[in-house]
Image (cartoon, rainbow, N blue to C red; front, side, top):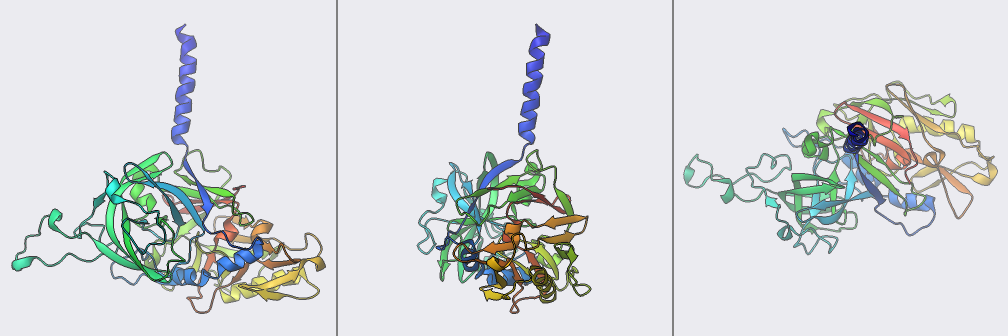
Length: 439
């Protein structure tokens, strides 16, 4: 009898181990619902703010001794959000995903100038704590230094008597003022105690482009989620972003290196820029259109930490941008293969739009991004070409990096990542890609 009861017990133990090893998973939602039902017009509207995002990605951290990216600077409205809990008991918030920012922050009550009336209430959380200016976190958030001791004494006052660490940062067309705090962050069934974040108390300027409730920093620095979570997620997260073809689709954010990550993923090394250590750089070795390699000048994709040159994988930029010589070569090869009889027109950020009635079905070639490690990221057609639902028009869904920013940075943006599982394995310094239907 004992033997017959042992087998079910072993099965239960194995099942429990499998569940424990699985990655935590959260739904990823579109943050903005454009007024136009056409995917092409929607993307054009969303991409208008890409210039501000690219300026943020291409700038260097200017603070001496701080290698992480600024908490927020010149960013565009985030494209995707996840539902998280903050405080005890948990208060539900929709936090914007940002792979190029470290710090997490939330709009807190009271705040008469924040973009939403649905705010995190510190007074209702038993685990909330303000952090003083003497906290080791304060310099990382570029907070104000503690005042000098009164009376000329050298003895430091006790932390309880020190002012809270306060900081202010620009974001898009506005700026916000925040206090440094810690509380329990809940992501799915996981609880991360004493999570350090910024509690926003006021916003100056227009709030149109700000996250409504807050932002979850998924960068590589010490303030970011993977660093603060410690061994909980083993330095790994992944996402699969839903298609822009429907704003009612949702994708997923998986946290941890468990069984939820795909086995078919192909990895490329993750490069590190000490001046912008939050960013996820990869080494692109080339592009191909159909079966033809795009002929670009030598060194066009080279990584250079001093200038910021290279290629960044980013969740916040809408359409992929290539430096001028790379995009010119890509566009030329794409146009050569499409051979649209009436030529090409420009629309918004796109300059290679053509009449689809004049091109045979299947006439648009696929674009493949080649990376170190033998990774050949063949973009699905909906990631390469955007169609108008109102007219027989389609556009190559990429563009040249704007000339008013550091034009040495290439950005693989979220439109080209949709319906692809992107794995950020910081522990092993690699980024992986696998096809997946995320919707």
